[in-house]
Amino acid sequence: MSKARPLSPHLQIYRLPLPAILSITHRMTGVVLSTGTILLALWLIALAQGPEAFAMAMMAVSHPIGQIILFGYSVALFYHMCNGIRHLNWDRGSGLEIESVYRSGKITIAMAVLLTALLWAVIYLA
Image (tube, rainbow, N blue to C red):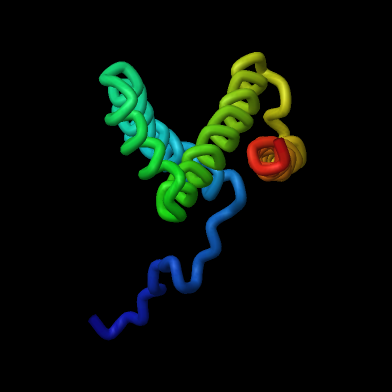
């Protein structure tokens, strides 16, 4: 053990590249969308059960915590959609060069932010 061995890089030293971050985020948003869809189903069940149940569901959705959950769900939805389109483009065999991968990643983030902002602007300004 007298040899000095190199230490493996860890997350405090090693900086993940943008494609790795976007890949991990894509998987996380898939999980968020799965759990959020259960909440959407519960909202639809409340709608089907009548005015009292629906009023309680709408009270939960209109609460600030409910609004934060809906906002997070919409961010996950738009990000997952934009990144899915990016992956479909890769499946066609285009955009696989390193520069294109980074450019499309930045476009994906920008579009997700833009679409989320547009949705919430329509919700609150309509």
